[in-house]
Amino acid sequence: MEVQTKNQLSKRKLWVFPWKYNESFIISIGLLIIGFLLELFSNGKGFNSPIWPANIIILLSLIIYIVFTNIFIKHPLIKWMGSVPAAISAIVIFTLLILLMGFIPQNKASSSMLINKLGLNHIVQSYTYVLMSLYLLIILGYATSKRLYPFNFKNFAFLLNHAGLWIVLAAGSLGSGDIIRLKMAVNEKQTVWYAYDETNHPYELPFAIELIDFSIDEYIPNIAFANISDGKIITNKSKQKLPEIIQGKTIIMKDWSIFIDEYYSKSKMVDSSYVLTTDTGATPSAYIIATNKKLNIKKEGWISCGSFKYPQKLIKLDDQILIGMLEPDIKRFSSKIKIYSPNQKVEMITVEVNKPMNIKGWEIYQSGYDKSMGRWSTLSIFEIIKDPWYIVVYIGIIMLIVGSVFLFWHGKYK
Image (tube, rainbow, N blue to C red; front, side):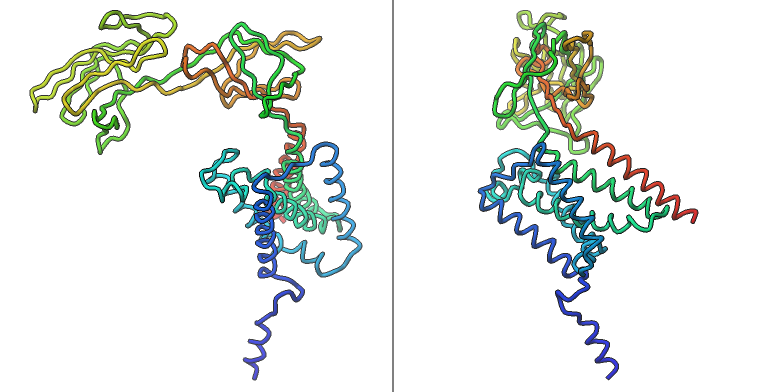
């Protein structure tokens, strides 16, 4: 009789307070499904993020609502919203949604119509993301507001940590509608003060950019064998990385011994050979001597990857194999620019990939160049971004870190 009573107690019915993990995950997954359905019914058009001042009104209203209901309403639902099961279920589902962004290319049309219609190719702008981030903000807000009283060191550390996380999530989600992304293309010796948004609409900037010089640094090019029949590159099974072309080096590939007799990083074609030059359009070239002792074959001559000015040069080793030079990979590209702005000194700065510069609250990123011209490009393409909420995000990150340090310190030395 005692065993039956314990079994009956262990079989707790769903939707009877206090709610636990079962109800929490059902609600989180349910919101995820509702988000996908809303995206599906909108034909994958996504959600337009609120812009200023609507986003700050929503944010303040959410804070007031959470604090007020947590203090004055003692319903079990409010208590559940600040519980560990509610927080964990919301975080797990939200994290899964974020992980999908790493597997599915964003802001590009997918070959799968289902991915497009469910908004998985623009997750941050989807109804699913909006619902899940709003839900997580509410759950996290209740968990944080529970520590407003009593005020002590432990609660302060917890409050600082969770409030920082809440600010990062809120500013990142509700502030996305205020982000301005523009593209600007500038030729050398040209000064431009306007950029274009994704609809190709011009946007006048509070500063102008003059491109002084655009430069590209390249790696040493690689040598490669290719099948004449299909053009596919042949590699050694034991060494998949293609060898670099270095003067005086001997490369063994299959039954062939390739000696690099001469190598020019910049050259031009003269008749059937190459000579050093710094002229526009100069291309890498190498004189090679290829020997196959098994077949008693010896071939020699110039190979080159070519450029917009000079053609590619290959050598046919036998009836099946060609040997040539691959285009060198880009090591670094950067732009030396002048910034002109009203009533301020002219600034000379260098912008390169992953090293943006901040001008009057705008981030200037090096994003591209004229690929048809390669390292001889005189065109530089910049991405120019303004995010008025980034300071708020940084404040949240600092609060999160400081709160985490306090929590660790308190747990270690209490």
